[in-house]
Image 1 (cartoon, rainbow over the protein chains, first blue to last red):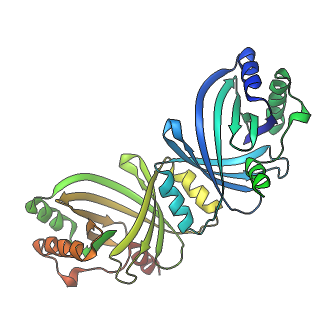
Image 2 (cartoon, each protein chain N blue to C red):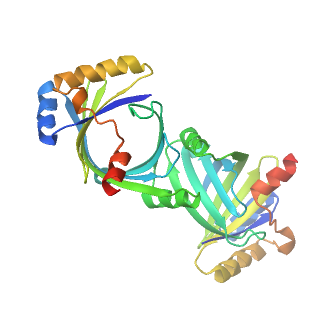
Image 3 (cartoon, helix red, strand yellow):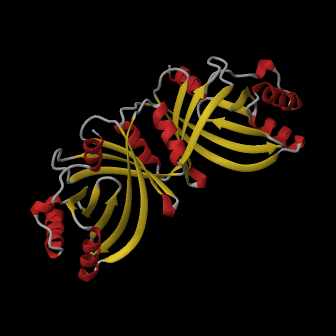
Length: 169
Length: 169
């Protein structure tokens, strides 16, 4: 299970705090996420990571709808963004929203920090732990969050897709 | 467009004839093709090539239904068979049939020969040309077929999925 909490942050400030905390920068990603329309509590996306030349197809079941912190995720790498897009369209899936992010990925222990500048939406830090024990994962996430000076008021419970649609809507 | 004609053959005899003809063996494949239920004239399959450690997701539109010689095909390589299978099941697709083939792939000029021993179904030679000119492609295919001693009586117009379902009753 993927457990993650999304916080609204200032990108540059959060970056400094992560480095002070001792988190290690794993990589920089320029992402384009194309989401398809699915029933509520499911997400399907093709992610192109432009600078790495990689593409992924990902399906997520949202285990805690509304709160959006717990996901049962399946992902494969695929050889082509446009080909995958065409196959999904042929299967009758409708394209929903496209989200572009500039992302820095940090790691400290088994906690992953995804610092995002999301085009048209804002700046966010996703703190993530992969675990079959959501309670323990949440404790780890919040321990890191507190060290970065983040609290409940900084949490953004909406999905990026929801934020994008509210902006466009 | 993928243009191909399927012939019923004896595997070993066809192999000898292809080698006499001067076709070059490109590779051997141990394939497992998992097909999903779709409307008529569409095919969706995940192909695992066991000996090469590769997996592909392929969608085909059958351009000439019934005859099954002309296909508009989109294919991507994917990093995992089981993960891809789970994503498609989550999208509501039903698994249809599984087909196992031992395949030798030969090439001569721009003609590809796929010599198949298909588990439970029989032995076949698919002669294939990729072209935007189906008429010209068919001429090339039939020129090769005649050189191999094959004629209209050897053609098998049914899809492997149809043959498998007829066998299973």
